[in-house]
Amino acid sequence: MLNSLHPGQLPLFALAGWINRQQQAAINYLREENRILREQLGGRRLRFTDDQRRRLAAKAGATLLGWHRASIARKWDFSSRRRTPGRPPLMHTMAPLIVRTAPGRPG
Image 1 (cartoon, rainbow, N blue to C red):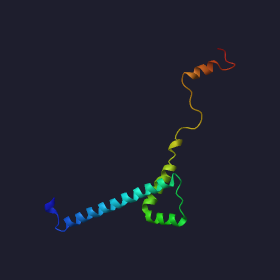
Image 2 (cartoon, helix red, strand yellow):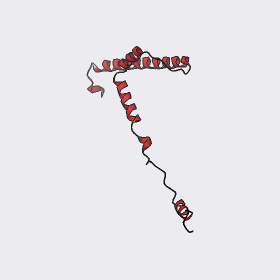
Image 3 (cartoon, rainbow, N blue to C red):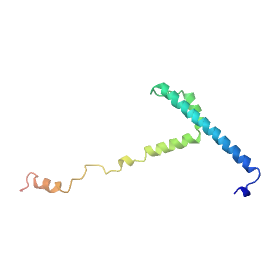
Image 4 (cartoon, rainbow, N blue to C red):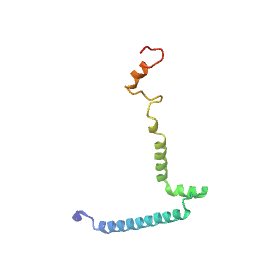
């Protein structure tokens, strides 16, 4: 595989790997910072202003839209209502007993 590389590709791959590591380090730092700040809130809910919400939504871009689309799809999939409505069926052994003990039936 190394024989088929263009001479400029190896430094480009090295640079791309270095940039990826730097970005991952920044993401890990920001995640930890968020965890620490949430711990300082003590379980209280974050309160954003409208301007802060707009700025976050602008940074989130397509990621936010995809999350919202998936969230709405989960909400409206009706999987919790797939059972048939009404009274549940009787056990097969109970039906003859009910018929036998019904009022007005000789038994």
